[in-house]
Length: 321
Image (cartoon, rainbow, N blue to C red; front, side, top):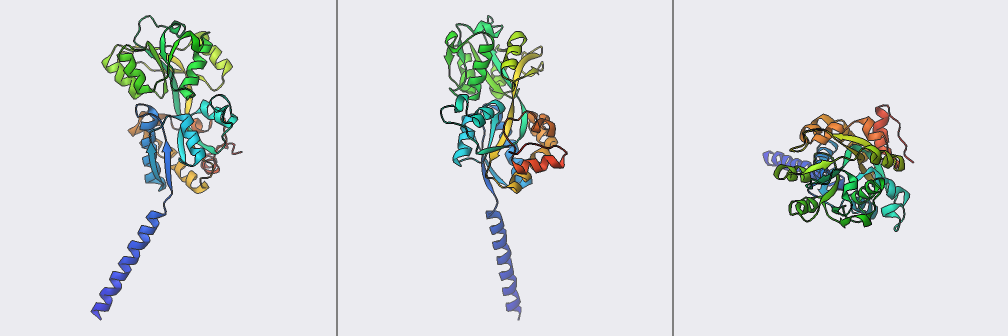
């Protein structure tokens, strides 16, 4: 009798373990594309991925990538299910313009929400570069061809009356750009990311580097030509040696998801992020910009129905088609 009872307990335990294993194995798995390891996308994406995993029960693998365009294309191909992108590059993909003109529009993604401001940061160690116009004839890193940074640089240069032919363009990542500045191989670099950006922080800590303002007539023309830009002030003290606020322009870092993701999963991951904004902010400063208002404004592509359900609960209606 005792043996039968023991056997029953053992069998029950085996069944529980089996059920738990089955439950664990059925969890949704997603890969999130971010950006280079020296940029804000990668660091912030890692924090978001952890909260999505802990609070929504979705197994998220965060990977370093070439940025916005690569993330959108990888969601379309099914390699990724989540991605951080610039709001302007997202607009190009949805409409099939600029970096997506040759391949055509990509509509395989939906918006989860805007995350934080991505400042267009023009960094230099050349004391003769005080404005965008001063870049004429200089060696300037403008990001990978077709990248978000590349088109931001083209927009800013154009607003100042310059073209790619008026500079000596270099097509480098954030980390390579700051290394090239330190080595004297380039005169300036465009870096588009949430401030502070790790690559610029490291550069300013060990070198006499500074940000060049993008303001006045240049900013006004840029915003008139491209409405997804807004002005932004990088506060004094953001970087070592930065004694005053620096005015520039910004786009918005945005989280997107595969259009085929389930409504329940996207609702849960949206809730995991925005219901835990304060805790996320304690781990990464960009979390301070997380809000329903910021998440739902200025988007040029439709929201996923799962995200829309979460925002509706907060009293905000968003476009899903």
